[in-house]
Structure formats: C-alpha cells, structure tokens
Length: 233
Ligand code: GLP
Image 1 (cartoon, rainbow, N blue to C red):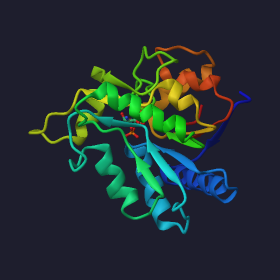
Image 2 (cartoon, helix red, strand yellow):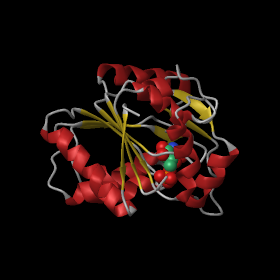
Image 3 (tube, rainbow, N blue to C red):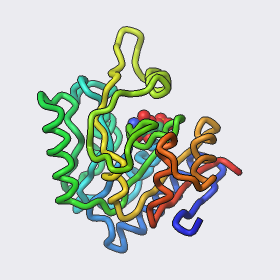
Image 4 (cartoon, rainbow, N blue to C red):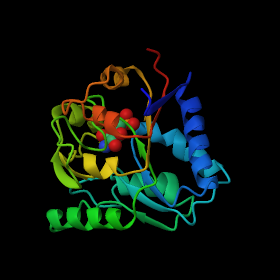
C-alpha cells in the first residue's frame, strides 16, 4: 500500500524506539509544531523514551485524542492525569490541550475543541488501536465525517479498559473523542500496535477495504500513514 509504510519490530520497546526516531526526525526538520498524542499502554514506553531523550518540545503544542466523561483531571484514570504524569510534568510543551470530560455542556466542549484543532492543524498524530479496531474512542460504526464528539463506549472497550479501574471505582461508559475527520486532518499519522490482541484490527487494515465496522481502516484514505508493529503477517 503506497500510502502506508510499515515497520515490523521484535519488541514493543524497539517499536517505541522507532517511534521516537520518527518524532525526532519530524521535530528536527521543523515539521512538528502541533503534535497529536494518544494514551493507552502502547504509548507508555514511547513517553518514557521521549522523557529520557534530549528532544525539546518547548515550541510544540500538544492535543490529546480523547478523555473520559465524568472523571476529573486529577483522577488517576483520566487521560489528563496519564499525560501529566508520564509526559507533561517531565517534558515541557508550549501548550497542551485535552478535552474536558467534566464540562457542564459537553456539546459546547466538543465545538470548542474542534475549533482549537482548526486553529492549530495537527502535523503528526500518534494513534494506538483498540482491539475492536477503534482509533481514539471512535468505535465501530463511527462516521468518517465525525469531528470531536461524545461517544458511548462499546462492551468490548469497557471490558478492555476496565482493567485499569479498581473494583470500587466505576469506569465511565462515555467519553469525548476527536472524530475520524479530525484525525484525518493531521498531515502525518503514526500508528503503533503491539501484541496479538491487535492482530484482527491490523489484518482488516492490511486487507485494504475501508469499513466503518473497523474504524482503523479509514486510515487507508490518508496519504501519509506509518505503522509500527511487532506482529508478523
Ligand atoms: C483506548 C484509547 C485509545 C487507545 C486504545 C489502545 O481505548 N482511547 O486511544 O489507542 O485504547 O489502548 P492500549 O494502548 O492500552 O492497547
């Protein structure tokens, strides 16, 4: 596929190294003013390595893909908390943005976020993939025209992500997420997928057919996608 470049690595750690190399190239070539970031376990070694690197993000604005609704930024399971803990408190950025899942008017919050994205077009967007093929929190069935919106998480996503919540915590079942269209506006997409539980989603992508049932396949319509995976096909 001419629009998709794939790097196959042996381990998640090596994958993270490759990803950091790509980011470093973009930064040094002055092509990274606005950086779209992702959360999840996939990105943990990436942020560890970015923190350990000498890369300077002080002139870079960051946007995160998604956030749970109803848990505050200081809750350990919020994506705001994840980003502060793992990256922002250790590597200074010019500015960082994430959807406010505590906003009183969630629709207004979506408009606000999408407007910010329009004003700050994404240069590079990092993406993980959900087991069901979701990107950010765009679950199966999401329209390719979607912009930042409220989502109801699927059973599959709740089952996977609930492992991060303790027994006495209730996992949110709704979230705010950039839409497929918001993500597709980024000049460059860098996707990381490690482990067997991501095989089905990547298989669908490599099969080359776009289907809303597997949101990751919308990436087939983007002109510059890099995939880093430890899966061999
Ligand atoms: C979550 C996030 C996604 C992330 C995905 C994969 O649901 N909303 O942005 O890509 O899960 O997570 P992990 O990297 O933990 O497999």
